[in-house]
Length: 123
Image (cartoon, rainbow, N blue to C red; front, side, top):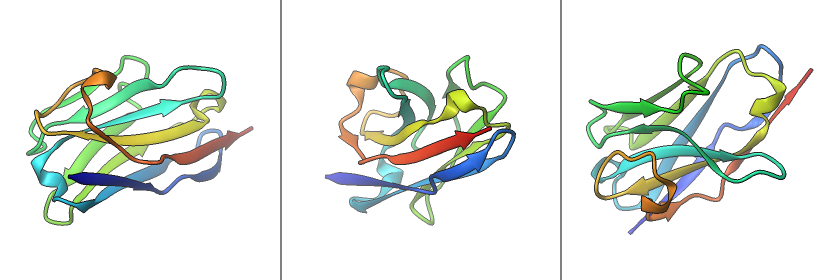
C-alpha cells in the first residue's frame, strides 16, 4: 500500500509560481500513476494533471493546461506540480493521488489519497 504525502503549499501572491511535491510512505511511488486534484471552498474536487508511472505520458485539465506542469523523479520517489501565474481562483486544497493502473483523469479510479496541502493566493 502507498500513502501519498503532499508538501509545498502556502500563501503566495497573484502572479507568483509555486511547486507542490508528493512523496509516499510504504511502496515506491514509481509503481503508480499519480494525479493532482484540488478542492476549492464550496466546490467539488477537480482533476488537474496526471502522469504515468514512467513519466512518459501526462494529461492536463483544460483549465490549467499551459500554466501547470506535472513531472516525476522516480529515483527520488517524488512527483511535482509546478504552477505558474497563480490567480485567486487557484486557492484550494491540493491533493496527490495514486493508482496502480497508471495514468487517469478520473477521480474515482484513484485508490490512494494524501491529506492535501493548502494553497492560498492573495491579491
